[in-house]
Length: 214
Length: 207
Image 1: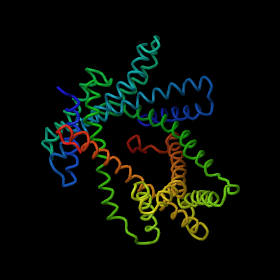
Image 2: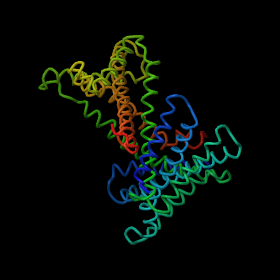
Image 3: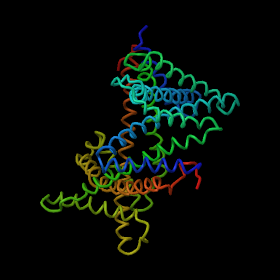
Image 4: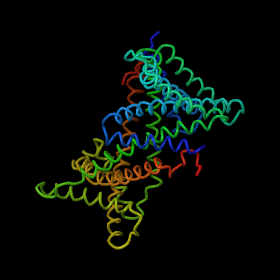
């Protein structure tokens, strides 16, 4: 049995089932959609077991990693069980402990990392020279600096957008409109490239299995 | 007590992670590293919770013969097939689990996302109206960026790809940065509210 050909056919049939939605909602689409949901869920559970739980929890707890068992790993194990307690209504309250741990650690982690990468680094990147960069460099850098400052003014709602603040907010929304338009165009093109990839798969991988060569 | 203990846990974990960044020395660094590992393990339990919930929902749909219940067995079969192949044979390349991932999940994922191209285009056609000059600007920048990313753009006018690239590098960057900085300040404020127990909605909306 040629597993490669079977794999191509599986992929192609499922692709066509999903594309059938472009005509209208139909049982073929629903079948493939539900299969995708189920298989994806199964995939992520297995991925989680082999890539997160086994190396970080089980191997550490049993000492399969470096040879010495780390019994402190029982604590996250218990918290993990608490998380699953949500499935049992009588003890569902225990899941708050696990949730509290995730939220607290996540908040602490994201506070520092977000502040560093999305705030301070972006501010640092916005401090641009306006001299010695040529005319185009001057214009570009000015647009970036003014755009960022005015964009932030637009998001500042503690002061009414009137007078100078209103004008700055107006410039900000203009820059944001251009940015949203560009991001939209970029996202659409990324989707189109996936569409081209799937079309190529059907034309150049699947059709040749039936003896049709383009 | 119902809320007190979770709030204490949140506070301690949050503060330890912040201290871990500012004091990268023992014992804080050891506790912080350990907590990061624990976080990964406990958070991964949420995936099991999600999977169990998915199974519960679809079994319930089958039992009650809810609308479109006939597709629920497909979800369960897909889920069980992936679980069984992964647990029985492992996840290495060329094994059944990887084969099913490569031949079924990857094409279905790519198709699902590529379908969005049609929906986004149709939604844009209905929503984008050049009603004022700013909306026109949004429309024009999207059009130029799209045109600049395909060969026909350069064939129409060779400056289009250059303008498209400039739009991505300058105005788009300025706008994205403003959004990013604003969102980051929001994340910081929300994180602090959570750590200090002001924001408690994650505990079930209790005050």
